Image (cartoon, rainbow, N blue to C red; front, side, top):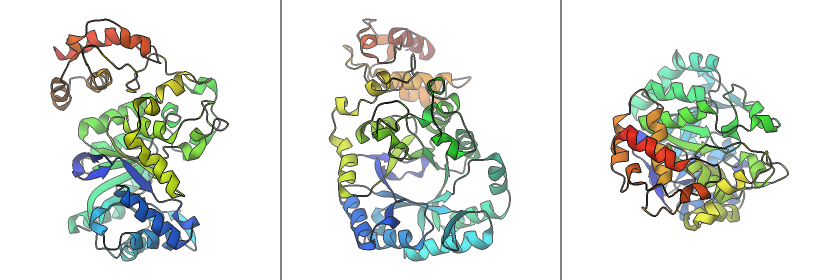
Length: 381
């Protein structure tokens, strides 16, 4: 298993994580065994947005004796009322729900205290002004939550979260289909039917949000990486073709700022399918050819950092050069951190010999040689 730093938290999380959403639909013993199996395979980060007692008990019991080797995303504002999940900012429900989380984990802390699920501006304004956010800061000051995070499906909210300066990481929904959708305050609309006109490349708000996370060292963990399983099924996929788990994991992990993708599992075999990513070949990881050969797509001319352009005779890491170019041109001036990372590359864009072999392999028709010239001029090297 490979591990990545989760932004400014400094935590080294497994790039394959565990999304706990489906734990409650299995026998408790089976779900506990599933989590322990994932841990044995090197997974060390789990998300617990679920307020139901069964799911929380399962995670707590699975961590017995090894709590310090797990990183938990525990949500603040996810509550259980009359046997139902309710997202709320009402403190008479928020506080007991979070205290219940700690009790069921038999722990006095949560590694990542997640401000739960903000998608609308109204909710953002209500959450960031008043008792709720004061409670979050109080938990942080006491060490009850070690780091402050937030979950959202809306890149506009994500950008606001980055700008706060105190939110250190964000749980965000990332997959090739979602990335084509514009920002919305209504998650359900993300699951509506896609038509050809809607598949128009990565939405600018999303691209900018990822760039902001990278620039500001705000770590991203990924939810909904499989689009609820739809992207694994050609009949339900908006692209008209099926992806593999490895391809979707690679897509998420190649977005700027991403540290870990939290997949949902029902079986050990599904965990194995995800963890197989760590030894998969470049061909097996290649999501770009799937998108490019799909009956419905429009990523033409956009670099998706897929690495399909390799190999370069000069050994330039073309995808990384393109990523730094995009990060740099998103600002009025080049961020110093981006410039330093670019300069540290073993081979920079100025070494490009213009052979255009990479262009013949690019599934999206990116004019790579031109991009190399532009990058060399931008950075001066």
